[in-house]
Length: 347
Ligand SMILES: Nc1ncnc2c1ncn2[C@@H]1O[C@H](COP(=O)(O)OP(=O)(O)O)[C@@H](O)[C@H]1O
Ligand SMILES: [Mg+2]
Image 1 (cartoon, rainbow, N blue to C red):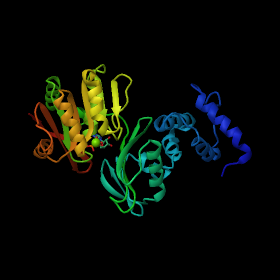
Image 2 (tube, rainbow, N blue to C red):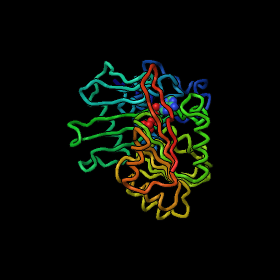
Image 3 (cartoon, rainbow, N blue to C red):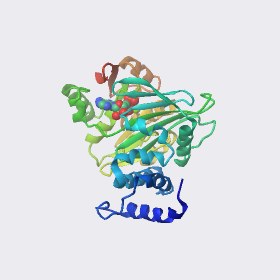
Image 4 (cartoon, rainbow, N blue to C red):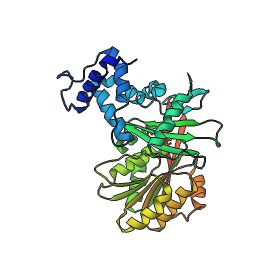
């Protein structure tokens, strides 16, 4: 409970800490007693910046100054996500939340049922965040995605609502830090030869489709490729889940709504160099892909598929596949999850 008498004083100290730029602990500015922390977290949930992500970042930086060890947990708690904080901290890659059922997670070592039950409160908080992100929660829009980010943490939240499912449920994918192409090669995800083949395809101006099963590292590879393409090239990202990072060194335009893609292409046509489609999932995404490639824009995308043949079949339903490289990934559950590039198909 908040100690009413202490309240304005505590809030003033929090604000001082927010404003402090360096040597904050030394100056005694961000020093809070352990018993004050509950109230600090509760009060911090009333500090806002211009949007959800800058707000989360602001709070995360505040908690990092106070005690870096609790920063992730405290930041999540300010938006009602304390229920999944220990999973987020436990190197989990994805979390499935179906209210009333056990929480399932994927870790490096495989997929597990946890001893926790998913509660409605966490789902409610995720719905509230969606609303704050400006997503319309209507029966016409029963399945949607958004991203949350702070520090090095990137979360992709997918929510399904009735009538698709009996009760709202969520699936959260977590990226903790950027993985570079060099790290992908060193970890055995990709051989040097395969990387060279991808570079050739890139230089030849081919469209790149990264295909693979869920969690095989498609988005990770796409983001790593984005990083080696010169920053001055104008990119358009169709990225509802907000997984591809904002980067001040890159010339970027983000579109949240795939239906706006056509207008953007049309208005920016002469200026666009590259198009990234976070995931070819629904018809609209394939149409955006077709439009971009037909306009001669080099296009990058990820797509769910188990084999190159399946990927081709899916693409060909919407567009003639040409000038394209399909990078096929595989994922295998062993002692640890193995992910790797299994085939590069060029057409
Ligand atoms: N090569 C890799 N090495 C280690 N972790 C990886 C690798 N590729 C992906 N991951 C992790 O696995 C999870 C799923 O990756 P992601 O790229 O989102 O998969 P997909 O887009 O295929 O669903 C993320 O937590 C990501 O950080
Ligand atoms: Mg992905």
